[in-house]
Length: 386
Image (tube, rainbow, N blue to C red; front, side, top):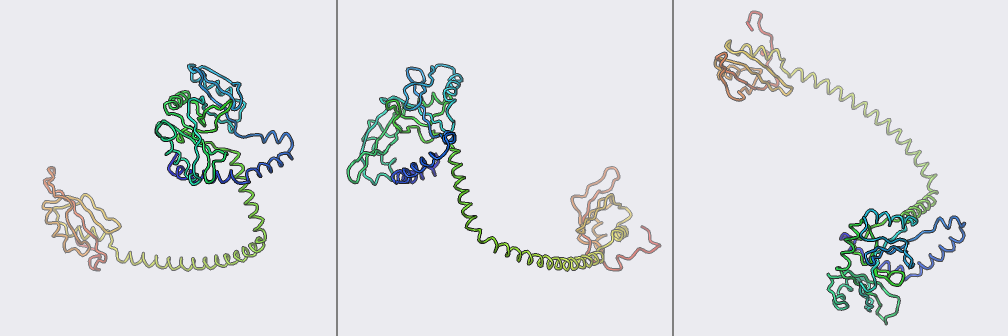
């Protein structure tokens, strides 16, 4: 059990006690019985249900299974038998019980535990579990960590301002081996209790962390029906708003249609402006850009005859990269320094000699000037050499 569930448990216990002490449970039971009597017999049988407890007891090395309140067993089998055979025997004995209604309790003899009736002030009801924990050392010969306990509020009178509860304690040294044996047999129980005649006391000594969580489909169906009733009531109360909502929806549809036409006109106007702006941008971009042929022509004129290029690249941002070989690669920066088309020329990496050609291999980068002078972009004279 997580921390949230533990913190909510005292509140749930108070609500549960307040519900039991109110006249509503008896009234609802009477009302349900009257409504049930009006149904056909077949439907009444179909609605039969409710929790059905069965007791599992270990007697002299044998497991006994019987319905609560009945002395005759449904089945019994030796504890030394194969676990799979024991599970099959248990399933066959409980085959006639609806799994949603089945509850299985490990029942120990009355002498295995300790039962004490104590009286407490009414103020202890709000935190009964904690109060009883402090009473264990005084009411039993055990310490709190040596036993598992449960407490039941009794209907008997205890004087003004007080109430009676029954403390049921079971040593962990007795319970833990049985739980380990059940875990080895893969048998899950919903409670651990002491025998009282043919039935059980009504306590649950199973540690909270080991208690199974069950979902009741009938409770979910009831919640769904209650939710459906609330929805139908809301629909009935909101029916008188229907005509007004229809008129409002028609007016809103007209407004939306007019708004849609206005948005289309605005979209067309914006598209026209965007197209005009894009055309002007492209024209200006073309005007400001430098032709690639002009770049190659300018580099051809400025680079010495002892240098040649192996690779040339130009990206959209105007970055230039070219690789090649030259006799004196270090002088290429001075050759391109005064170019009207290229700026920020420099080497990338180191200059390396090429053993095959005897020249220096280089890789240079630069930037294209955004606006090139007209003289630089003009074509070369017809008599010039490339």
